[in-house]
Structure formats: C-alpha cells, structure tokens
Image (cartoon, rainbow, N blue to C red):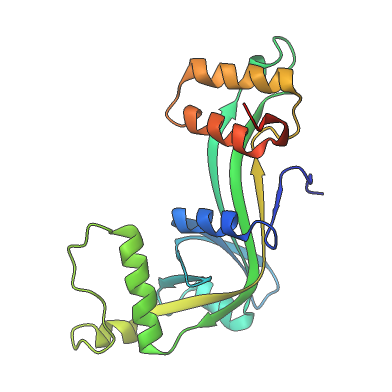
Amino acid sequence: MRRKEFAIDDEENKVELETFLEEMSFGFLGTIGADGLPSVTPLNYVYHQGTIYFHGSRIGEKMSNLSASGAVTFAVAKEYAIVPSYFSDPLMACPATAYFKCVRLDGHAVIVDDPHEKARALEALMRKLQPEGGYKPIDADDPDYIPRLKGVAVVRIDVQRMSGKFKFGQNLKEAPRAAITDGLAERNLPQDAETIELMRRYCPHAIGD
C-alpha cells in the first residue's frame, strides 16, 4: 500500500504532476497482449494538451498489444538522489533509500488516424526533444510530410486516472532529516542541491526553513 505522506493526488496536485510530465521525455508503457500477459515498453513521449502522445512503427509487439486491448498504464520516474544509510545511522543499513518523483497514468490508448492531430503531436514531440530547431515544421498539408505521416503510427493515451509518488523524506523527523540534508550538502553531487530544495518543499514540517 502506498504511504500517504508520499502520495501526490491528481485532484489536489494536478499542476505538480503535469509539470513533471512536461519536464520529462521518457517513460514506460504497460500493455496487455492477446495472450493476457503484460508487457512494458520504454519510449519517448510528449505530454501535450492534457494527454500522452508517442510514435513508432505500425507493426510490432507494442502495436499488436494495443490492438488486443487499449487499456494501458504509463509511468514516468526520475531518481534525484541515492541516500546512503550512514547519513543518518553509522551502523544499520535500514535508512538507505532513494529520493525520487514518479507519475503513473491509467487510461485508454487510441491509434491516431487524423493526419492533422498526428502532425500536431509529432511537432510537439520535436519541440520537446529538439528545441533548438533545425528542421522543417511538421505540417499535415506539406507534401514532404504527407507520406511520412501516413507511414508512422502515433498513439494518444486518453488519461482516466493520474497519480504520483514524490519521496523526499516527508516521513522523517527533524533530526534525521537535517542529517540527510547536511550529508547531501557535503557530498555535493550534481543533483544533491536540488534534492535538498525538494526536501524543503515537500516536507510539511520543513516549511519556514
């Protein structure tokens, strides 16, 4: 059962969840095959206008599974810091943990046929992955893009439920939390300073630090 102190509910914290989805570009698609077995596919995506879009080949396991069942789960996660046990306990291994954000979406996958929607989704994906430009904008009416849009599969996930888990020491009392922030500050790995700020943001008792 998910610990409630780490849960980020979509009704109360939708902006937090959507901001994270917009920041990230890589996730894991869970599908169910015709044989009833689950499958997970890693892929690039874009969160655009309240939905997930991804693209790929028209054939293969992923598309076969979507044809068998449109019910899908999609998950995105980012690990910010591995927190060693000795930050807060010089003897026991139990306090070792990781601080992270993850968002899960449950919904229904729809294979997009409309070329204009496909073009908008792919253009949004390009702006996400290649913000510096260097390509001709994707336009469904552009003769150069018409055959390419026909040849690629674009899938939209209509989200029915969104939930998240942001773990940044919300369960800790002040002394062990301070020990961890001090340890992160001293270690000073690339994401440690950001992790400290997220601990201060998400730990209710840390407000005002």
